[in-house]
Length: 337
Image 1 (cartoon, rainbow, N blue to C red):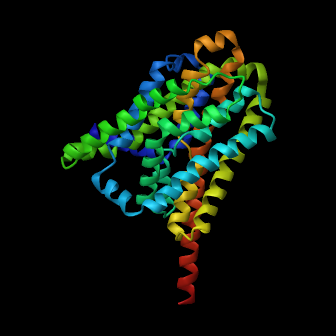
Image 2 (cartoon, rainbow, N blue to C red):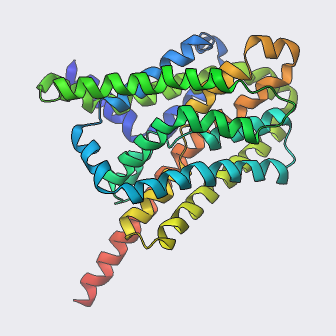
Image 3 (tube, helix red, strand yellow):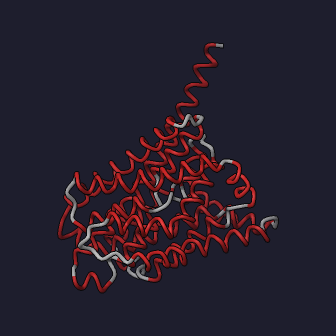
């Protein structure tokens, strides 16, 4: 039985994107399957995802963080300037509805995604640097995310920066800290290592639930606006993500990072914690009170949900392209010899 569970967890980890997309499709056609994922339930699920991240952080990661402070600082600055301002620019270029604009701005103002560490590994990047960047951007999120959203969001929309700060503190920083402490005190035990190995699968399941819950919530708006809404948001999400990769890689080139670090900063900047953005959108912009006043408020969750799935797909594809280029270069070198 335990072998079956491990095999299933491996399957989830290796094919995260298809599972996330499948959850969205199921939620659209069978809404009752994910109708229970809303409000505090979404926050708890995000907390579990963040706990899974904390369980993989070790004291070695903290030491490595101290060894390269300048590169980490550059990464954090890139994270909280490129993606927020690119998102803001795209809302103007595409002339987005204020609530759709808030959704993509939320995605841009969130820290790097947990899955970016796996993508950096697949891309032959600097995994230590990736973990450090994700850790620092997540620790800065309670301050940076609310402030940037408050600054960049449409002034006609009320932004509860204080509430957002506390929410991020509760559902991200606290679980990460608990996970780290568990790893510190229990990390050498065999059972704990088995639990750690299954954490990526837990993150995927959590992301599937969050995306499914969002699709159920925005389903009426999707019916009302049809495919035009999906294509519009997909275009924005594509541009946001692609520019994140290109500009992130550009920062690495500008500061003369080695190839592994350039790939890592590109992935870290481009892949956002869209799950966090989704939960924040649901809690502070598409909550029942706001939706009762303005039904269009649920639109803010559409960019977040699509980003959840799309960032996973594009990040994996980019990582595979980087790995393929390495194999091709090795093959050419061997032929020359």
